[in-house]
Figure (tube, rainbow, N blue to C red):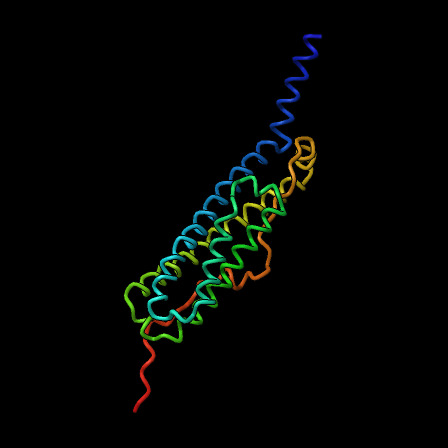
Length: 202
């Protein structure tokens, strides 16, 4: 009996080594790491919103609806706990993506409004904030792409034989990924012309 248990334990160890269990663990950790970077970059963007809104208020107080829209979208993003557990809950992941997409849309409308205020675009503080926003959007794109790739690798791994048997045995399921909805809008860094519009000739 003892010999049988020893043999069984040895076979189990070899099975875990060769059935893709370690690969699943490695891919899962990579996803968590890449997800942390996605969340970090989205947080950088959210942190810029209050300063952006305050800088615009001084030049365009009448644009209350647009300013409020950005503020509310930012608040919705902040209300979502983007913990690693979200990666195992498609509904929660979709909620996170929808909130980020809403903030992206609000920021796009916000930037359109700022085009109407050339004196704002020439303001040093606003110029700096917009440069930070553009850089952050670029970082978001890079972080999202890395996350998308890591999820693709993971999902392929747990669907491929014989690793899929291990995945089923241990309850590993496919991770949700970013969809193409609003992908162009979300992944394109905002562009702002910092050259003030020349005053019309008199």
